[in-house]
Length: 267
Image (cartoon, rainbow, N blue to C red; front, top):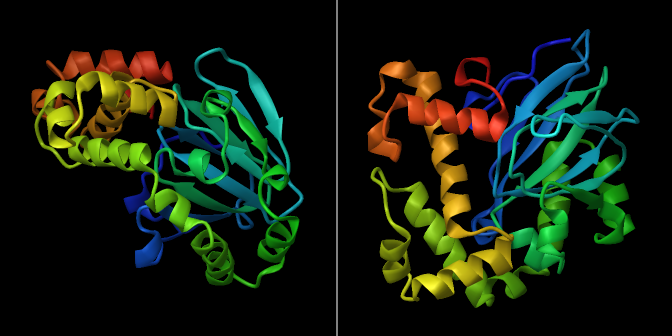
């Protein structure tokens, strides 16, 4: 079995197709991706980092996959189309031989509001997709000829729901706050971000808990770690980690152990 590792979207390995949404859905979908392991000769594993995003996954083969939590060491077998919740800790996903799967990665908080899902139930969890999406849509996606056709089908459905997202005030403020942190090259306090989105710190905290089931501090820690790991993979331990919110490299390593139960070099 291949050792599980993190695969960032900019890597674009041969087994992964990645496509971005149409302009009208840019606030809803982060990207679409399709995993094709038909040429792999042994089971394949990938590490999923702590994340604010939720996913829809639709297997295109009869094979299943296994989740191994880095936090409690539990394993789960998953089969069939699923909604996968946001993650507070890392896990390793191992696909069976010949697996092929289509997925939609949604922006933080969007899918919970779109489908009226319980944000706390979905945290570190999953639910059956056919309980929330039309069965006819799932079947059409499974039968589609290629990834582009699957995206077209999904976007047609999402465009019928998008008004509920555009008019959701709390979600928009949470998205603005996340964007401020993501696009900043310096540490920003919750008080500063609250001023940027024109609400109090207490109100912003309440919105984060309602929309994501997490406090702003927890969310920003997750975003900081992903940023830190990308810098580590590009520059190693010599990068000046205090520029992205860590006191030093050892602080980043401590976060890696707390969130993934692994050191950065094996991620």
